[in-house]
Image 1: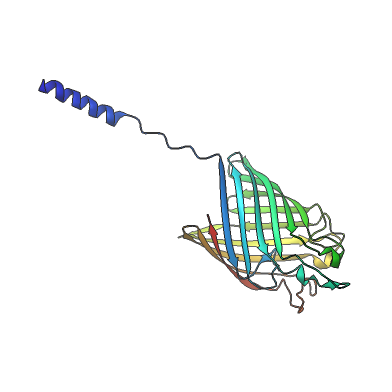
Image 2: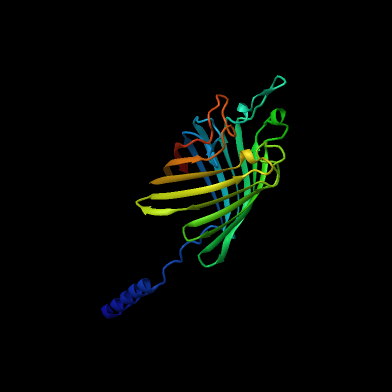
Length: 255
């Protein structure tokens, strides 16, 4: 009887230890992520959009495992208001809202692609009253990434940011992301903006950004950047060059 009990206990113990572990939960097909940030100024393609003043920013991204994604991102801006006054009408438009969607995938091993559409919506803007052209802009884009290097080309389907007769302008940029360890990454970047039929506004921009992941969703960044924009092309109401060399600091929270 004792022997039978010991045998039964041993058999039970063996059955428990030999049972296969439960399979890990499958990764969700869809992910929804949010971000919010505060920057010492908002620069886009090297040009200050906030007249060197701080900007509040935030966004949301939906991603499917197939590679499909859509998202929205917004920032406070100053440049439309700085457009001036024509016939007693002030230009207005304090917020930039970017709406985008696309598809990411892999061409071959270690070579990834990203193609999509981006709409720059300047909510309630009246820039057309100043320049004769609405500031809202539509672009399509395509990017290739190999190892740490990404090359991307963006092509405007409309006039570019309120510049007359500038449809089919293009922006080509190359960047790299180097993992330095301990949550640090270094990102050098160079880009070339060509504004069709408006050579005065074409320029090259450059940047070197250091990011630090603090954990718990927080990332801080510092960037040294600038452009070779021609004198008088991108200026503030006080005649300051909006593409001048500068430093931009930011803190971002991902959740």
